Image 1 (cartoon, rainbow, N blue to C red):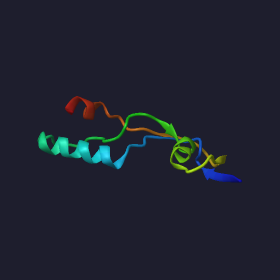
Image 2 (image 1 turned 135 degrees about the horizontal axis):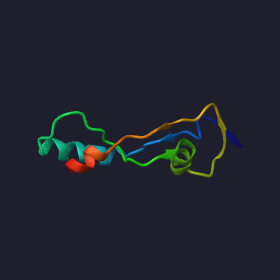
Image 3 (image 1 turned 90 degrees about the vertical axis):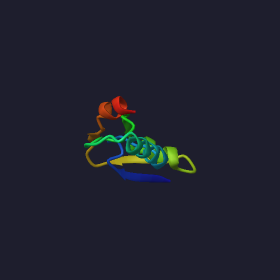
Length: 80
């Protein structure tokens, strides 16, 4: 079975909720302030992410345009 996935070739910056929570607590305990991007800083395609959480192999047909959204985490890494 094939699955159409809009933006499958797009790159995104995925991060687990657990790691984000840990980093938020570390920042709060360190009394940092300001706007800080909390993310992995690594790009992964939407199709690869979907495959990584799927219980079986997906046959993905990419549809739509693709783009890239990745956070600059240099400030975060400098604080933690």
